[in-house]
Image (cartoon, rainbow, N blue to C red; front, side):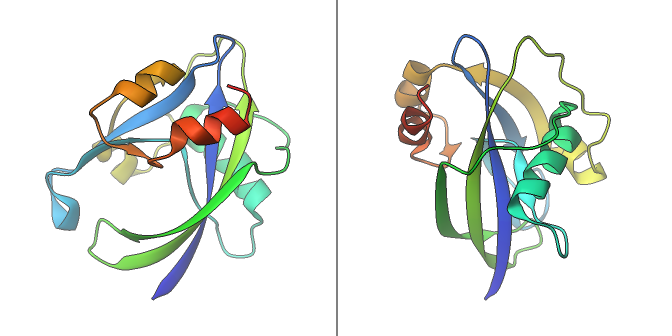
Length: 148
């Protein structure tokens, strides 16, 4: 099974809410799948987790930062990709605290434009109460580590 190292971002606003994107797949191996997830993605060849976090944050939100602090959580999980391949996702989670921001999807890939249908800022209680699928499943616990 192919290993897919990924950086994930816990983007937290002044009200201690976390940014999540809604993914809705209408075609391919994941057709009919809907879930909320943190911004982030796979490392490019030769890229560190930290550099990928900075790049992915900009690409998926338009937020530009110079660096991230040490990751606060990590996990390994087998995930299906949109083309049907199963990969071992090796994820590290980085906290990014932001002020008031205007998000941009200007740097989305074509696929991201298709599947990332909306975004929302979630408070801790909403995460614990939702019946929607949220990844990672223990996001509320991870946010507790971040003091949010």
